[in-house]
Figure (cartoon, rainbow, N blue to C red):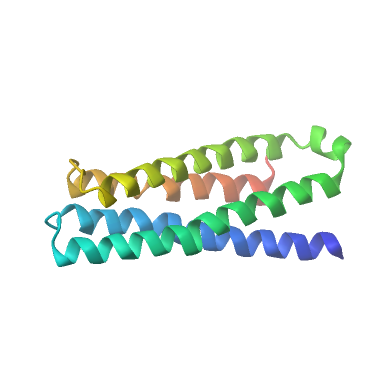
Amino acid sequence: MLYLWIKALHVISVIAWMAGMLYLPRLFVYHADAAPGSDKSETFKIMERRLLKAIINPAMIATWVFGLTMVYLMGWDAFVQSHWLHAKLLFVLVMSGLHGYFVRLFKTFAADRNTRPAKFYRIVNEIPTALLIVIVALAVVKPF
């Protein structure tokens, strides 16, 4: 029963993390078109900071804590034999790296130093979706 509660909390955390990872680069799209120092730009800074600090960061931490707890509860032997899980963890690491990259972009916008056009952020906005598809497919289908 404990495992199922941990799994439910993991899924909730993943949903919150992904919601933020999909929304933050969308904010960057609009922020890139705002003049630095303008009211619009300052509003985006507040929105980005709150999203990152209140939702994305805690959700990523919770995702890792609950996910690793599930790995621990399943046992070492089961983990070693779950090759799909190894692949999933690799893509979750990539998602975590993307999260770090988004933090760096956030800091660039906060300092009014963005030099990239909105089109760049529209492209970047698709990366979390692609990773989400792969991660969910691995977790549900368990192809190997």
